[in-house]
Image (cartoon, rainbow, N blue to C red; front, side, top):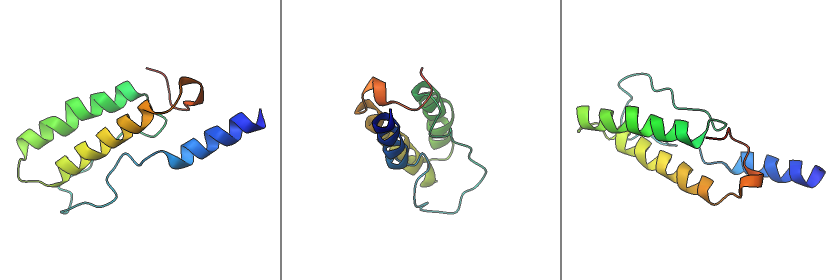
Length: 91
């Protein structure tokens, strides 16, 4: 049991941030991305219903491509984690 808890604690610590570490420009508004414990489907929904439309609406804003890259990093990282080690909500 302790090994499982330690492993999951390590994975929580290693989970990539959902927001970019660095914003290329000042944010033009409030962005509320899902938490690290949110399901992967919630992250995909954030990408598809928020990030991509904002990229299209504000093509000159460099922050939206940064958000898109970061969400893709998180989703790719999650794919490498075995189902028994996942700590986020299931889809």
